[in-house]
Length: 329
Picture 1 (cartoon, rainbow, N blue to C red):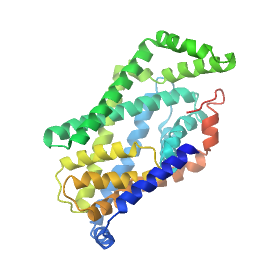
Picture 2: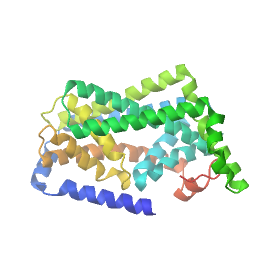
Picture 3: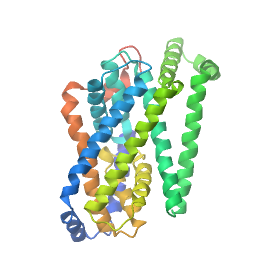
Picture 4: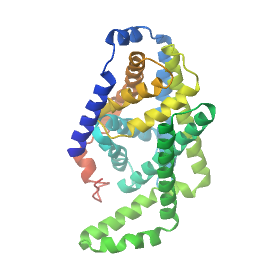
């Protein structure tokens, strides 16, 4: 509950900062000036991104179990609905939980695949940042933030690889701590840790890992294309490289655990990114409102479409995993 309340507070604060000093008639004028013809390919790209997410996750899960794309796409859509609907990113548990109900994959192993997925996304986004850094000067705060972001990602990746290659040695290091717990808890934690590391197995398969990397690149290229189409729809006088800058800033912003639907985060950091190119705040807010509506709208519509086949509750996600193990974030 504290995480949820904190997330809602942060969203409220960012909404206030986004609206402070805004010229609302200019915002309405910006909304009326959209080239709606460009909205159609934007929505198509957003749908394609959900398909890529599903296919990539199937590859990450494939060392554990091969699961059909209809099931994966259904769970992916509902899982991302949970992420945008539940504050403080507690919805991240939905996909792992739901896939355990439709396969033999353990929840902790599914969480391991999500962990690897996030690392792949982080490295791809940093690659985009490096390209933009070569093409255009960036503010010092963004360079420093991205350097910290990269350092953390590389440290996590090194830790993941170490866990995969030296599993027993790594677990032996934490065993003295686990041994202090009651046996029924200690034994369960050991099983959870082993299952979690099982989710990293894709890293030991070069062919499948290469496919995951390519799909990650394709996913974020689609996202860049979506942002640029939105620039064109609003007739914003910004260069193509601005799409990469905005993407990096936006990803940093929505990584902050806030309220449902990234409301506040999305708008504040869109305004921040576009301000680097001299776009007035009211015009940037119009862009942020429509871009947010389309991006979240596609996720919500697809999620609601498949929700009747993938029902869940937050208490279930936090309390169970594959009917065999308890899990708490």
